[in-house]
Length: 600
Image (cartoon, rainbow, N blue to C red; front, side, top):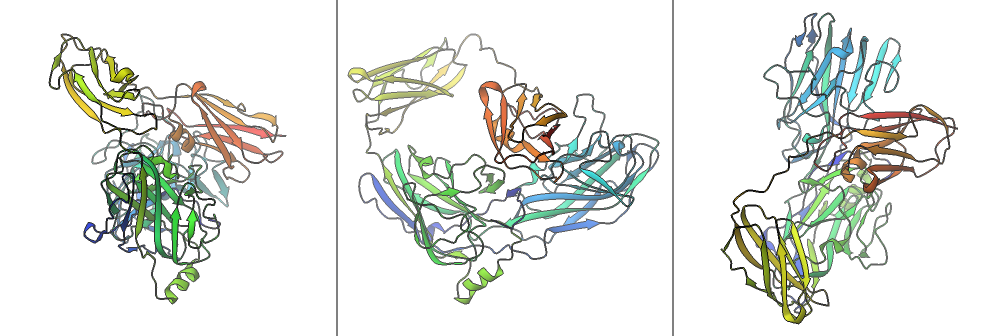
């Protein structure tokens, strides 16, 4: 896309045909089959020319000299204008406020689903503030810790203006910020709990002044959204049966597409075992309508659908043009971060069961009405009119291994279990239980593996055999109960928040080359996906994020930040690390971090 605003998320949208209307073809051979759901799919039009949906209230919220809850507590907004099947893809909160000491204010938003986010706490220092703050996740940085001026706030004719990501500058164990009942426990300083949910319902702003001696008020606040509308029905399902285990190739066809534009439509295919591929995203542009176009998606195709040009009927490779994961899109109830577009995602899986095709029609404020009108003029509507189909190829089945010992239902008393059996001679035998895996080769047709230090309880050992051609057998299982005299030592869960150890260039470092890269090192191993969402390089002069490539190096607990183009000369930049960065145990970063440097 070229002129839509940045999007934070997409909600779950899908297309479906009822099982009763599905036509399922028989496999054409022992190792391949074609399966078709011809039911048409109606795709919602969510283009709205009047901008973001919002609702506000100008009921005055007062803060007296005494510490405590505000005069209106909570202040509530009832949002009812979204369709029942709308799901939030972006959210923001706009607040107009005056206060003699901004650091005293704690603001928390609670949504209809009971989730909450700390909008602001311990920010702005001991300074007065008169102006607005617009909290939203794509703001370049949080409100300052100890100042009410400078980026992101600026002063114009006696009035402050600020865009800020939600921020809580004091998240230590002795944090004294409390919200009296009926407020829930304070939530994290992020909006993640609201994405993929309905915007309709009661939104509550809990405001507390935690220190005596300063007064102020909130004269107006509003909550605003982007959201998407589910196609009908949702999701589209496809039953596959009669094929051997072990997929070697999957091709997907979308038949007779009639859309005003393809660019704002996301396609996710899900296999029976839950694997997902983001097969088409941000492709095809938004200037030309698609009329009766059939797309065959095949990993071996010679070309991809163009980013900006509408495709004609043909065969294309799957493509996700937002493969840098700067957008966290919600399709089919969960986000698409780290999903591959390749249909090879399904290689090796069991093809039999229910496949699901999810389609998300995102909200866009582009002027694409002309393209839609071109479709309507031919008597068509936004739809996948001919449904969709799968062509699946699998490996020939190989023999299921036989487990000869231990007997199913037996009991072990020392936590050490040896599993033995027979399989096709030379086959690779894989045995798994409780996340532990053992591999061996069935020399002369027999095999044996051992497990030690098994915890008390029931353990199911699942065994498969893979032949020299890569064909995977159906599984064989045996269940054993371990009853040891002393239970294994249980390691305590990791609850320690990670920290930022090092940022390069160093804070306020000057004369940095325009071709330089940046680096952030953490105190422990981090979740790569969360790091890529949390780290940005921002130009202070423009207030915009720089386009970068982020590479997480697990061996060094650090992320490299490589600008895709040279930086501007004599320019100040900020390395921003949001609290959304998490360690491998899911603990959020203890404190957001910003580091400033200047180029030559």
